[in-house]
Length: 279
Ligand SMILES: [Cu+2]
Image 1 (cartoon, rainbow, N blue to C red):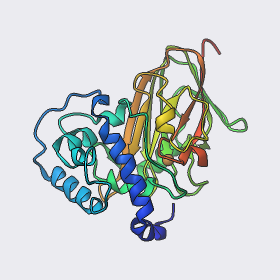
Image 2: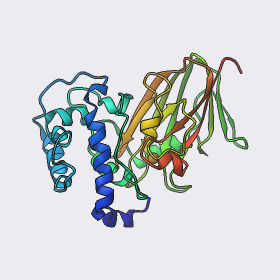
Image 3: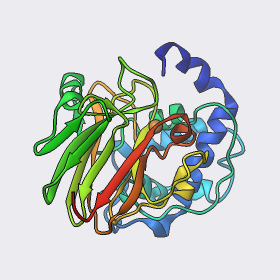
Image 4: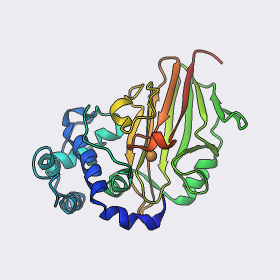
């Protein structure tokens, strides 16, 4: 996404409503988190959160429940993982409904929303290096856009929508949306970096073949326990937002990885993820 379009989009109320609907529906699923909520939400981040929600809350979206819930401490803890890792970052169950649509990208609002979420940050230089890095033990077929791992431990990095290539794609070892092949039973660790200056992105490994869905997070359940990292926010002066999915590729089959931000998989943020019983 281009930097110069963001101001206009932030003012576009339709987009704001869509992003709020996303946030509201996410927050509504308090039972989906995988991490117990502890501690009090009285800190600087919470103050930031409240002011952020208040700014977006001038419309009708925030009038009642679950909007009210999201404004409070419970919503904050679920969204940001105060006292633990956010449930939404680790494949916590998401609600099966969402009032959403339109042609603009809610990822732009979501990117701002999650810009200050807790989690690791890396420098743009580190991200560029990670995006080109050939993972240890990987066999690269550049012509066939395929990366094959034969070890029982698989580790690689993914850049979401970096500059210098097609927008709304993933970059792995310098390849655009390559097919990734791992062995059944492999322990897989994927470091995802949001390299987009102004749009949220995430990554889910799913058995769903449906990449045309506007709301993949509603239809594409994680294929394995832990195989989802829903959203990473925009970069800040602290660096680019990064997160790691760690899961065991238990069952052979043909899967996909995709970005869960509404509309992104449809635009091309997706690739094949194959789990084989042998190579
Ligand atoms: Cu995306």
